[in-house]
Image (tube, rainbow, N blue to C red; front, side, top):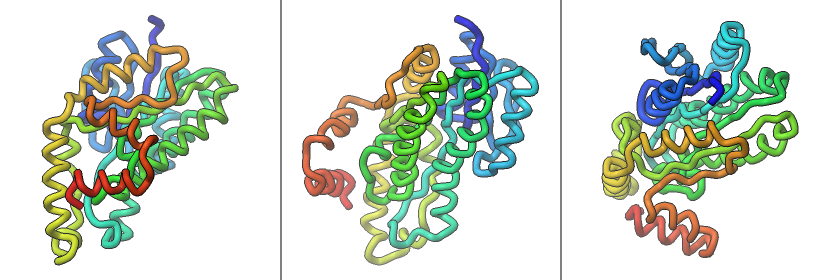
Length: 267
């Protein structure tokens, strides 16, 4: 297969690291973006905070200057903040939405002029099952992924005529460093109304994540999407139970689905 120039954000761990390694092993030139300095013989790392529009634009420009083009962008960078929606601080909301959603937007806006000029390219955005249903005590995480869903669908409609393909991946629970790096709202933990329920819900969330699929499962799906000429817009990657929940949502009423989520997460 022809070598592709690929940018992957959040490439220091989890999905990003596994995907970068697989794509590099197939002979592609992979640029991994992450917030800290890293070095790897097969992957060209660049330090970048995706929340910074000027920094993302500068990094993409430097890559294009070096190799002439960008064929694929994998928007993987993301993080999670747990807690009650009512008690989330402005700083927590900005960090959650800025990293997951605006980071995706910033990267897309940085690569699109080059892809449009070349009349080819592919963008793969990481959403989540949490972008298909609102998860209690992960509300702003879900909001950021819902935003990616709408953004990706609209973007696909706008740029397909330029030869640019856009799709997204919606992972279920995976055993990655995401669980350990989640930031939890202290105000929610301390609140007499929300605290006990949040703690029990968080225990369920962490158990499901720690017992989830390995990141290589998702990485293999992303590699397939990179290689496909016309990838599907939406790609759920999850265990059978979680995949079924995404189907059931379209059958049940909204109230019924909220009731199931409340029961499952003990909300």
